[in-house]
Image 1 (cartoon, rainbow, N blue to C red):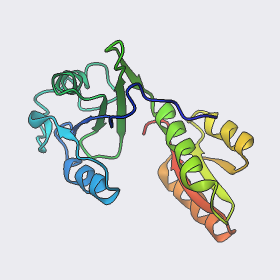
Image 2 (cartoon, rainbow, N blue to C red):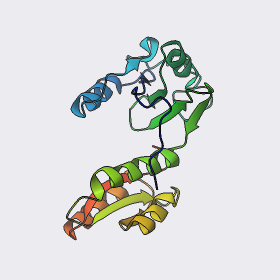
Image 3 (tube, one colour):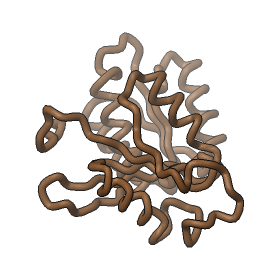
Amino acid sequence: MSRPRVLGSNSHPRIAYTAMHGVGHPWAVRSFDTFHLPPFLTVPSQRYPDSEFPTVPFPNPEEKGALDMTMQFAEENGCDLVFANDPDADRLAVAERCRKTGNWTRFTGDQVGTMMGLWLWESVGKEGKEPVAMCSSAVSSTMLSYIAQVEGFLHCQTLTGFKWIGSKMEELRSEGYRPLFGYEEAI
């Protein structure tokens, strides 16, 4: 598998982020700082927790219309990517604007999980000394399993829920594997 080229790849993509009236903003900032990523722009009206969720029809980034305000903010500020957490910050939605057409693509949790797994494999997994393992739950796509077969790392399917993914990854660690990533379709 090859890495896609970004149109105008000499410039880093700009990111618009929304916490969707929840608790995710400080954690997103901390994550970007930890990994030395350029700062993102935040949708001001959705930055702070508000249990009334006044700017979204339903506070789940996977729901139709929930990302509309963030995508509009992104367009107004020249952002190529949208990252959105749900209010308790245990889900992540991602959308990308094509620089050529201006059209948006909203990725499913399975697509995000597959891309993250592949990126981790290519960036740190291939070079490790220990055998690599990744997990996804039974409700997730089999694409990561297929990539594992082609690339030569272990993929394990678990029952639904992060407790099962985490438990399996700990089990694999005790067996000498390097568990790099686990996900469920609703990222």
